[in-house]
Image (tube, rainbow, N blue to C red; front, side, top):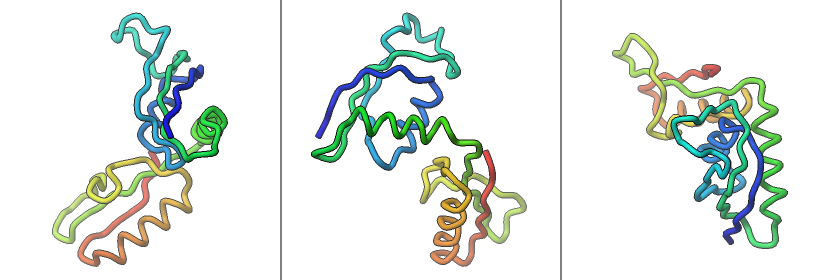
Length: 129
């Protein structure tokens, strides 16, 4: 089900929800009070018109508010890095995770361990962002 809502939120929080939310799917968002795209600042708060895809029988506004609290309450975010046995340095893992940030150290370690089990020729590590 798709719903259009209007919410006031920081730019970087909106971007994080768009890229990383597992609860809702933000299909499109537009800052209503941003006149020129060149004036965008990720630390500023904007009023967004947001198109959200969410499960039936759920309130899109409540789900979005929970996601905002989750993403704004984050102290540390992590990403998975990968290195092949012949390489000297690690790089961001993008094939399986898409380079997405991971909320919470436990979740990041769990994902790293599952990736490590799938491919023993690669080395993975969890890195704070």
